[in-house]
Image 1 (cartoon, helix red, strand yellow):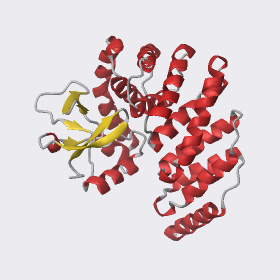
Image 2 (cartoon, helix red, strand yellow; image 1 turned 120 degrees about the vertical axis):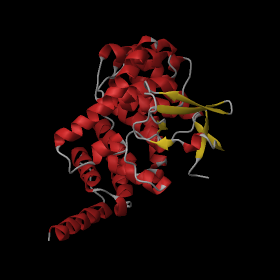
Image 3 (cartoon, helix red, strand yellow; image 1 turned 90 degrees about the vertical axis):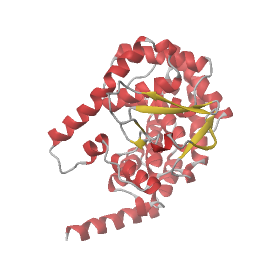
Image 4 (spheres, helix red, strand yellow; image 1 turned 30 degrees about the vertical axis):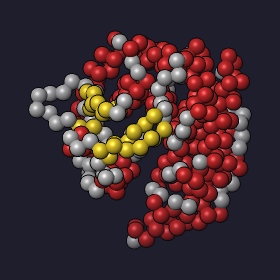
Length: 330
């Protein structure tokens, strides 16, 4: 059942699962041409782009766009017992292929979403938050920044925030995509977004990933220092930080790395908390058996930048990794 069940979500919280035999036959792709939505007891599928005749319909079994290729493939393998060989995984993971070949494959993957993005811009006022999140995520994946499009999308997001529409997950994807595109909404859109996020912190369930991605966005653009929203921005940062601290034990190393980076940025912006950063590193080291070297180096860089002391367990993990690498070289 877990392999074929679809999650039921209500106001950002998982409310149960359902079995849909026909929909369960659809295959996964990290570059899907469809997405699904469960509404009023019915499951609907929507095209994310133009679909060719006889083209297979696919959707993504996972909703974590911040995973690396290795993490994504490992998660799919352990959860559904198959090896993903979609266009995106082949492009990102084909380390043996020449760089030019990988870029060509990634370009082919990106071209399919351009038309969807342009079409969405035309009717942006009619977009739901999930639609805005899908378009922004496509732009971020392609590293395609169009300020006119982003202006329209953030205006639609502002309207949705004022009407309290959308789920926490959708807002987290939107903020992560805006951060990756290095685009901060203007103050007129930022204020209702902050208010909507603070309201959702009180009313809705937040996954650890939602917390750290939202905090990372707030820290990246130093919203607590924007004069027009300084008080509200500071309150949001502190509330997110407190909630993230409580959920730290549930975080994976990817989420801990995001949290560490956010804390470093907040430390540089006048919200120092090196003790919390040291706790993050301590939790990080407890996952030593499954930690890639890149994640460890990222945490080291965060500790050094914040001038925080590395916990003894974390230093021990580094020593063990160094010995492991040395033995491999032999």
